[in-house]
Length: 217
Image (cartoon, rainbow, N blue to C red; front, side, top):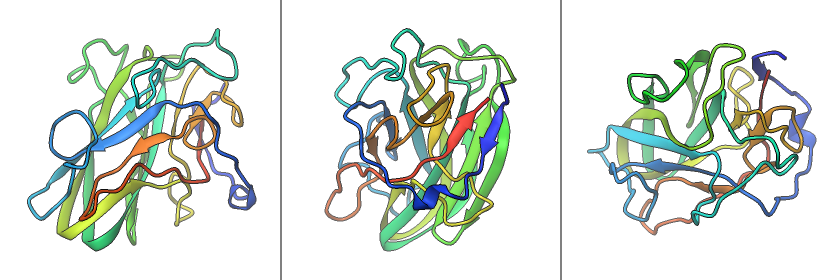
């Protein structure tokens, strides 16, 4: 199967109903390895970590592949869309990938750039992938960190659909799991709903967005 990202021009017109199952993707701005109301970004914030747990929900309960429970929720690629909103602004200045054997010795190889880091307006986009045919075990991974320059106290959230046609259009990850909509793709809002961004002023709960990108091979 192919090892790339599929851009779907028609997805913006599709309606989605949120499923009841989940995995968990979240941001961490204070190096606590969790997402809480304490994760407020300010002018002193320079890095915001992004974590993904492929086989557990936000409450810690175990999750299996919904389309085929016999298939593992492993991971061979990831794609991210993040935007800011609220009081203040964010300049996204770069992405550091942590999915390599230097940071995670148990990985079977290094994730490499699939779609380079890009920014436009209030949004950023990036994706990485393992070599074709290589997969990492199910589990909890710190995918990487977005480098930011912050003014005021805005908040960061995961986007569901890109504002720019050159962006990765969805947030999700490639997996042996078939997925419910796209082949070998576990996509936010199609296949899981649990996500958490940073807080600002009055802390916000995690937000579910409506449209996701396919990571497939």
